[in-house]
Image 1 (spheres, rainbow, N blue to C red):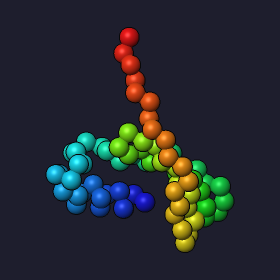
Image 2 (cartoon, rainbow, N blue to C red):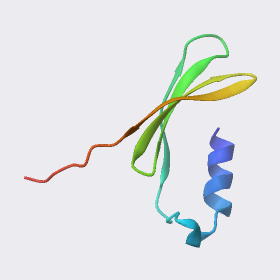
Image 3 (cartoon, one colour):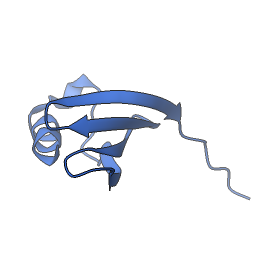
Image 4 (cartoon, one colour):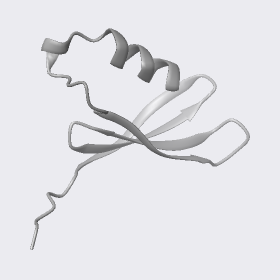
Length: 71
């Protein structure tokens, strides 16, 4: 997963909507078995939940991040 993240960030063209800031963040990783688990990714003001196993990665859900208001 980290390798894929590195490649996407390193080789994506600047003009494709990506900035040089950390746009993709792996927020959490939880194992629910020996080789199975869940992880969340923050990307483009959304949090996306994935499940993984040795043979599969599947998107489970997605939600928008709430805007923080000052004051």
